[in-house]
Image: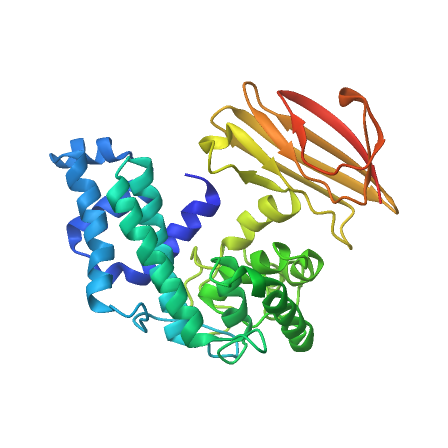
Amino acid sequence: MELDEFLEVSTLLDYYRNLLSDKQKEYLINHFEEDLSLSEIAKNNGVSRQAVYDNIKRYVDHLRYMYPDGITDWGLGDWIPIKSRSEKALTSSIYYYVDTDILAKAAKLLNKEADYKKYSDLAQEIKDAINTRFLNRKTGIYCSGSQTELSAPLYWNIVPEDMRELVAGKLAEKVRKDGTMDVGLLGSKTILNALSMNGYVDIAYQLASKETYPSWGWWIKNGATTLYENWRIDGKKDISLNHIMFGEISAWYYKALGGILPDPLSPGFKHIILKPNFVSGLDTFEARHTSLYGEIVSSWRQNKNKISYTVTVPSNCTASLYITAFHKVKCKELNLNDVVPKEAITLTTGTYHFEIRK
């Protein structure tokens, strides 16, 4: 399981754990956290592969029974926020959608076409219910417009396509106005990603690199060597010093700055999507990921208007490199000379050195 997927599913398990039976929890932890296949789980528990899938499906069916209109306010909400209190029914309903979408994708992988249609339709119903209840289409604001209330719908693909630009702009405006990050557990997963996925990666980097309260840098500056449970370092409760829930920043560095992304149609990084972002205020960056096929490297250095970018594609793999259209690109290995790419650059196994000018 890739780091980003692990963090996503861990959040879901924490969020809905109390709704599950002991056996359902065991299956989900085996599958998502211990990376066991359905066949391995079935063998270890003396049941069939079908029985494992059925238990996971019952989980979503239970949510559907409890919340037939697609809206739920069950759960902790944006746990341990900094200041703003986000609408719990919005964030809880979004995670209900995410659960259902994961199940639909699993059904497709297992060639369960009827289930795939059923849960795809249910996911769309939940999404529609969320937008009907919480989105103001005139202003582009969800609920009161907190950072979590805007970033969560963007990141989890709840926002209607014709509204994405407006909602993303409202999020960037909100962060600029606040001058700092103002999120809890759920917002810490979505805030950096929602900004960087929608054209505001420089703002995301400013949040990620802060050293004043509240921030990851604030922890480090005050001696932290692990991820904490609370943004406050002097809290009187909820102050575990080894907690995964604010850990999304680790995956964000790989995705946003390194631009290393999995291709859903080619799992395990058999085909790699590369979308590096060369942010202001950072001169050098390198990301390395050891995939099933070998090490993927995405490394860059920038000096004024020139960027040197190096990428390594493992053996028996391919990659698609996306570089913003206004960049002029040189690459000796590909015989490119001041080309302005209009589409993805296709890479095969090997190491490539690019010179990119803005």
